[in-house]
Length: 555
Ligand code: ME8
Image 1 (cartoon, rainbow, N blue to C red):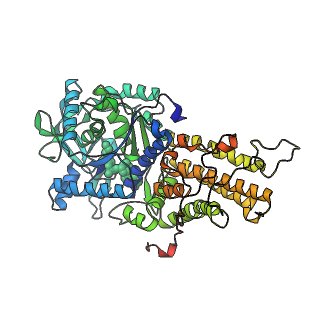
Image 2: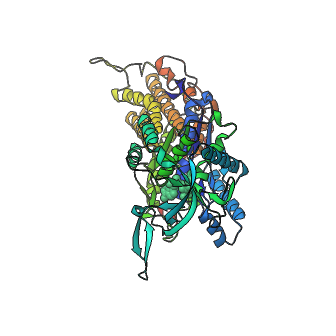
Image 3: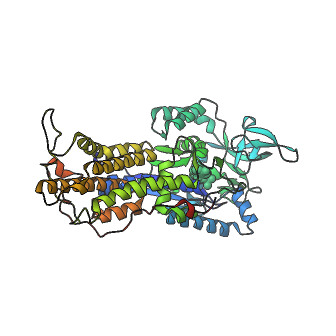
């Protein structure tokens, strides 16, 4: 278990920094949400034992496409960037993304970090001046080899070249640039990844990186002529050139860590969450830059796939961009968070449509979870509005041996308890393997099994005036409340506000909401339980209101 490990270290967890040429959409929010869930989960696991965790996000504000977007909007780039960056911040705040640091690449501290980093690379002999000639994609801010471009015809029949990977048009460009000796890092990178098989999750993406490193890595152009790109950080000592946006952007992770002065306690050990489209930058360029500067590569890169909408790529021109604020208004913040985390599978693209959200939330949050809370807290069944006493006479600490008749508790009940006791470790493993959707699935399955447990024993049929029945009824309620307390604790990273409502109703104090404070079902193991006899918290109403399809926007 993570909380017992003496090797738990400080951790810097990051999202990508978002381009400010357009506002946030569903995909951006997904990157941030995955990181938020991991961050919150770590807090639940470690509680007061957390040696320190930082969680950064922010905006990527330099580069030609941002310069162009500001021009189109008729705004000064710095005003434009500030506005869009604020928009990201507002959406993240609304979605309860609990970042500790929000960075903007136009900040002075970041500029100083980039200048320092550049100077170190230059001093260590990894940057040289060369002439670059080749295909250039402005939206991708990348030079491309012949093998990475293809011909297409536009509507008028004009032939043009596009990037095979992104589909963006490319132009032939020749200019003097500073080059980074990326070619020297192919073998060191290969060796590093072979020695660190858990550096990239899921494995599919680790294999892709290993495969890419089998082929030659050409040196990388890391500056642009200033005349063509003014919106960026000038190359130290040569203001005719601007630092390549990706070098600038990647250094944000070091800026957060306090580079160059105070990064020691936050570097190494970074965990980056990124989308599949920016894997190359994080798994090849970034570790190579770091090695060149004499620093450790990131400990882990978590890679997720993309969301499509009704089977199509999200794009402004198709008019199918999903607005996260709109989704929160329809499904509530926690509903939307739950849907994305429960349905998003890192290994492959996932499709978004409103109906799917409604079905999932009604089934899992309203019916299963809300139903379970209702069952064990409704005044009609839980008259005393508390955690009643657990009776080991009805539920001894072992199942019946063959031939032996034990009162009440069945083999299935013991199985359920065993599964629920194993749940924190299971959920933890899923988080460690970047399978948040599986963690949520496992919790949901247990919720369903607990509902079945309740249903099977039909406590409403028991006769309270009969002492034996009353004992069993109390035990059933106690067990159900204990299970629910476990689910509420483990659901905090995904649905913080629903979990808070649930745990407040279950009278769980803030310091009891971590795995160390959980003491799940200690009564069953013959120990005292701080919850036995405790009054429930005030009735908080319906946990999650069922959504009605016809009330949703028409799409
Ligand atoms: O790439 N589904 O920024 P960005 C899921 N500034 N995720 C998606 C998505 C979709 N449809 N569309 C985009 C950049 N994303 C750089 C990063 S980091 C040093 C610099 C994800 O605003 C995408 O995969 O284009 C990426 O992780 C994030 O949104 C930011 O994308």
